[in-house]
Image (cartoon, rainbow, N blue to C red):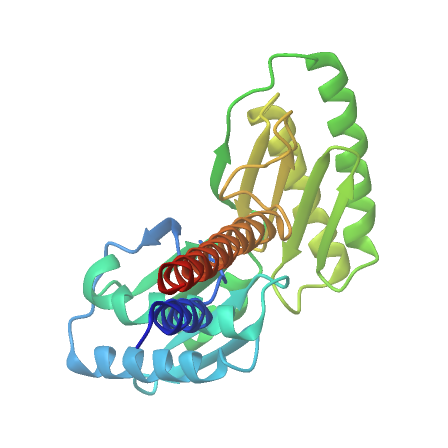
Amino acid sequence: MNFFQYSTTIFFISITFLLFLPSSKPISNYNTLVYKTCSTQTFNHESYSQSLDSLFQQLITQSSQHKFFKTNEAINDHTFISGFFQCRNDINNEDCFTCVTSLLPHISNTLCNDSTSARLQLQGCYVQYRTEQFQEKTIRESKNNEMFHKICRVPVVEYYVEFKELMEEAFMMLENGIINSDGFYAMDYKKVKLMAQCESGLRTCDCSECVNDAVMVAKEECDGSASAKIYFDKCFISYTYMLKSGNGDDDSYVPGASRNNNSQKSQKLIAIIVGGAATLFLGLIFVSLLNSRLRKDDYE
């Protein structure tokens, strides 16, 4: 094999390697735990654990096809376990399934240690279950706007007054938008990205009331924060103010920002590698031709 053939072989091996590089699809943070609430009461009988495992299997199966599913599993004639999951409406079914399945196997064993009731929120989904007496169900479901968790990020120091005015307008747009939605609303308003989502099946008026309460918390308890997430029993909201860098919080709702950014970086890296390989290949051809020319001159 002469030098030219050798360099050609190296080039095509390099191109083949690049083609089989892992996909540039970034790893999402949908499976990151945000908060958990676990009952101090624990299961004291094997039938409880069996019913809970059966409930989890139903939720896992349905998460590949739906973004919300609610069911229950009887323990005995008087007691049952109710449970459901809900994924963010802006993620696809594959990410929803991954989110739910990353959580459920660990709830009873490690995260909540056989608790009779629990709620666990990840970035992309949440799961809730509780043990109930049949006659208690309607009483408990009437309970609405209880705040579970809030995250307030770094405050905006510059242009505080302008920022406050901007957020007032943005929140008003969000509250109006959720009324005319199906329980999910996302929007960009000037430099702010916002999202609100209610529990599936919640009446429009209850959804709107819940979001309004969450907005009030954001205004009062996250005053001036560049981004925030407010989690209620029946809804949650998030917003991100785009700073000078143009990027929001990594775990705040920025539709497609982190994905597009990572994808663009990967594409640039691949372009650089391919360009470098092509340059090297051309250089090798030039050296090979030069060597051939020199040998020809020597013979002459």
